[in-house]
Image 1 (cartoon, rainbow, N blue to C red):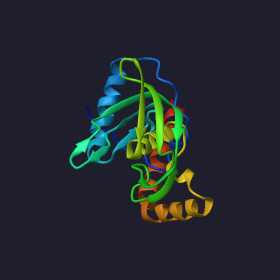
Image 2 (image 1 turned 30 degrees about the vertical axis):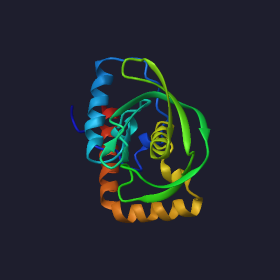
Image 3 (image 1 turned 120 degrees about the vertical axis):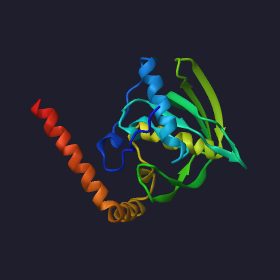
Image 4 (image 1 turned 90 degrees about the vertical axis):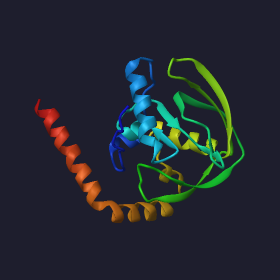
Length: 186
């Protein structure tokens, strides 16, 4: 397992709808292990496109109470089949370091997904687990949590994010442009 670099906004992969997983193979297992290792010290959920892989995969490990966690859950090809209620929660995102905003989500979700071997599962989740599922599933659909804010709140949050992270963003954009030029030249 390896720790992979986290992709930050405005990288275009974060706005891309991820493709379904069709091969439940060693490459997928490596990706899942790397994602779990990458997320371990940083957050409670991580979508594949946040490490630059546009596949419908996310991992999560959500705190449930004092010293208790869900454990690492590997979610592949997820789809929400039912929602209930409403909850507001202050969310953050590894792809928007330093930004926290209150987002409205469903309070409960029923999620259908596959595991690393392609076996189908369904789970009912509420509270923070449901919030994390919705946040990560949004990533797989090319939606970032700031897209869930009012236009004014989104503009303010993005302005503050850009002000705080201007150098890192410019460096990432430079690397992306260089990579495009190299691939076009070959």
